[in-house]
Image (cartoon, rainbow, N blue to C red; front, top):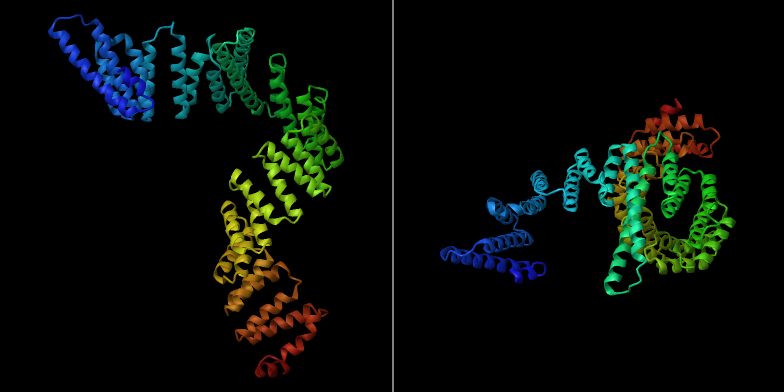
Length: 557
């Protein structure tokens, strides 16, 4: 059994074979004890251990039905009643793995009945697990009851309170969400106090270093939970005033966690930007200019971005310089400075800064995208394509990136690649008539008449007033001597441009080719009356002479 336990993670199949062998040997030993009237107390403990370990081995090998059978066998043995709670928990885990949520919850509830109030940590974990299952199956109010069973205790953990806050936020209970957030703040204060106490220890042994690492990770997790919860509280509907949530969070955080309070205030400034309230955003950002170096750099980056959006490029450039002076290796600061150079048409210098930003953060979207634009302005088409294709690998199917790749291939006369990328773009934007029109034109240049017609027709279906597409389709039908359909498109064009004479001439020409000379003459006559000063109308007498002799006699009569 010990050999099986050592192999259980690395070689579960071999561990299962050894577990089965251990059960067989225990069965033989038990029979020997019974035959010789030996004490069974130690044997009972060994039998439980081997059977329990066999069930665990079945779990590791995804033999869940066999695991349930073994656990059920142990439950039937009255002599193992003290271990019922542990068995029920494991059975709940197996049922959960089988996606049998009802049975899993039932087993966890029965496990709670077999745990004492002194086993707080175990009871909390069980309640949290039940709550998680209820969330997974969409029963949030049931989940809240189990999460509250933990959060109301003095020893509540941050993760359970965070899950409870998510449930309250999902059902729209603002007040309960705020109360849970305050509970999280009190837990955070206790954790931070514990961390501060342990950090005062000067012993640098390996065990102490591991402890400090764990405490450091705990602080990071704590910060992540609190920041996410604060953002969620801010985003909720507070009497139709979005600023109320931000103000409430800042009031609660100012004397407890300055770092999160500053972060929330920065996000409030960004929210002002989204609502085009640049004045309020700038006011918040400027209030941080006298703070510490890191805060000053972040503020300078944001202010540079705000002024750039406003079109105040000189001030944006000043703040970009301040941000770079504070932190030369901040990718956002490098991008902002590159943008300032870009609008001054210093494309080569901007390109160098974008490359430097990519060197710091290889997945920085703005840096790679702007690098592609700078290469386009510098005429470096192949390098621009390389930049946008790299960005495509980072952000799959972004329409802006796909368009630039396709457009650049078209500019470089690589029509097959251009068609390929425009088709990818069309898959992302299936209702964009402009993309379909471009694909139709590319196929037309490739002399693929059928595909070109298909994409032009699809473009017309989505945007029926595009004159370029209407004209192309009308001419296509004329070329294929389908004059009635071409007349439909020419008439549509004349409705869009009623003062354009050429559409009427096109309609008349179609009627002539169909042999409907009188209909053609009526259109010519109507054009001559409505546009007597048009230069093309002066040639109408010569055009009329091309009509059949019988019609000419009728006209003269």
